[in-house]
Every structure is written in structure tokens, then in C-alpha cells.
Length: 335
Image (cartoon, rainbow, N blue to C red; front, side, top):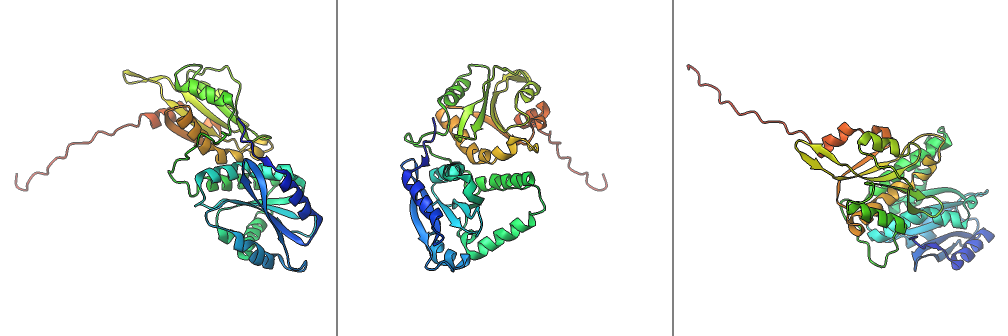
């Protein structure tokens, strides 16, 4: 099932209005009724107003601490002139945070990525002030010597950190009316794994065009961790659920493990696509546990699949307990 969130005709019309005149400073966008809808067109009182003054007078009064928002701003005098800001405050509803984070690429893609010079992910109102943009510019200037791939990888790292900010240990409660960002095949596969059927392996990927989680076709049935590592892609990110059947001591064990792998190999599409994965990981885990009924024993996050070893997995599953030595009371003097 796809999320169904697309750009509305009203948004396309308002965006064309923004492009058509320099007097318009920006456009605010929200998600409602499974669509990207325009909220307000920000028009400067004078074309000569500075970016900072427009931010203070037009944008700041509309920023709320508990409501996510997409913000399109005219920032540069030459093309591409626009910047796309995804504002997802920590105190926004969890469902809203998930939708806005997962749909940020859709907004830019459907309006035309050629119009945008950069995209920014913000979680604090202070980041959307003149001082906040100056700080962003200073940070970007420090990054200038980096290659495009290195800058993209840095954005990914920041997105991975931002994806966890403000969520803590709170659960995402998915309502029955919420369209899941996964296909029917994914949900069916997870349920089969939960029931102890199938090959014991479910690998998932995100389709970069639709931003929907899909099943990775595979007939592999790894019987050990090394065989599992050979099965996981060494170039593209993956969400992997694996039932690890093994013996420990004198008992048989079959825990379900979750692996999030995100290779950092330069020159591959993994670098460009991987930013979506930390934003979608929590939703995937929630669907697996709440909708499919999976009981996940341990979760692992690594960059390269080769970092996964049977020894490290077993140490996590069966930590060694050090035997406590009996306390010996010291002898009294003179004895």
C-alpha cells in the first residue's frame, strides 16, 4: 500500500504563482486529506526587502512549536532560487512527524527538483530565524571543500540523528485508517515470518520513486549468520528480519533479529537513497511488531553487512555472566 500523498492541483497552481513573480517570498505547505496542500503564499511588502526582514515579518509569526510544516522560500537571485525546508518540531504529533519526514522528497520531486538549490531539515523555531539561517550558511561554508558525495553522506548522518530526536522510547500508534508506507507483500511476508513459516528471511528496501517499502525478492534460506551476511546487499541499504535458529547450551533457540544495514560506498545510489531509511525505520519496526505480530529479540544497526558476525550476534543474545567470587573475610591479626 502506498501512502497516497501527492501534490494537489491547488499546490501546483500556487507554486507557479510563486515562480511567476519576484514579489512572492515563499509558500507554506501542509499535508491534509492525503495530499500536499498550500497553506499560504508569503508576499513581501516590497521587492527590495532583505531575506532576513522577510523571515522576521512573514515566516516567524507562522511557525508553531507543535505543528510540522513545509516551507518553500525564495532565497537566491539566480536559478535555482528556492530552498525547501522541512520543519518537524519535536512536540508535533508522532503520526504527523512520520508523514512529513517520509514525504519530504515527494514535495521537491513533484514540484520540480530543478527549482531548488538546497533542502533543509529543521526541528527548532530558532533554526528558521535570520540567525538560524546564518548559522546554516556558516556550516555549509565549512563543508565547501568536501565533494558532493561527502556532503550527501554528511546530510545522511545528520538525518539519522534527526530521525531519533524527540521520539525517545515513545511508540508510534498507527490508526486503522492510516495508509501504511509498505506493500501488501511486505505485510504478508512479515506475518509469515511471525508464524514461523517460509524461509525465515524477509529483506526490505525503499523504492526511491514512490517512497514505499517493498519486499526484496529472494529465495535464500540462510542457516547461519555468515550465510545471512552473504545474502544482504553490500551496496544498497536494507531492513532485514531473520529467524536465527541455533543451539545454545542444551536448548534450541529461534529468535527473530532485525538488521538495518546502510553501506557507505562512494559512487553508488546507496548514498543518495539512504537518507530515507532512518526516517522510515521506526515505522517499519512498528508495522512489523504491531501489525504483523513479530517479536523481535534484538535489533542491530551497522553500515556494512560484513560487520555482522555470528560471534557478535551470539554475544548479544547470550551475554556471558561472570561468576561472582565468594567474599573471603580477612583473618584477624594475631591468628
